[in-house]
Image 1 (cartoon, one colour):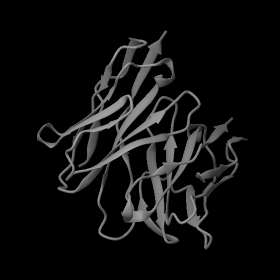
Image 2 (cartoon, rainbow over the protein chains, first blue to last red; image 1 turned 60 degrees about the vertical axis):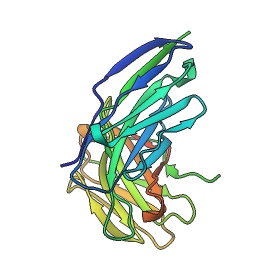
Image 3 (cartoon, rainbow over the protein chains, first blue to last red; image 1 turned 45 degrees about the vertical axis):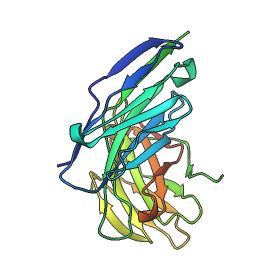
Length: 118
Length: 113
């Protein structure tokens, strides 16, 4: 069965601190996709990144970076120099590859609530 | 860029009433997904459609039904509403297998009293 675990329920940091959000996944598939979504207090779900299981290159986008390690089944997310606007719930998610052209359901972790204070 | 549109944004219903939620995917996207997010919970997959056919089914109650129309918009019909159906309902769309990236609408907040 597929499963996503975000062990950190809540994290509080002060502005300008770096913070890493952990994500561990379980799947028997050899091909799969991993995602991070941000849900600010306004409630919408904002897509941040997608990674496929064959691409273990780390990615950096501005203050955001992601570290994907298949050996430990982890896909961690780091925010550098955090800002108050980063305060949100962050979800890690997993999807498998379907046999047809359709996309497949996202399996979400429980989310990590990040609070950044000034 | 065009995003996923959901209507209504807020809906208040009483127990045992029915509700219909609408979703308009990003243009050219061929797959629509519905998710339910209870308070303080992660989104749970309900159902998806690819090219107007049901593609996958998750934890959707029998009281709920959904379909995708010829213009690719989708509707989630909910009957015999219960207090526990109060949640944020998200629609997402994707370009099928090509990207697997699901883009979410702003959600419909359903409150059942």
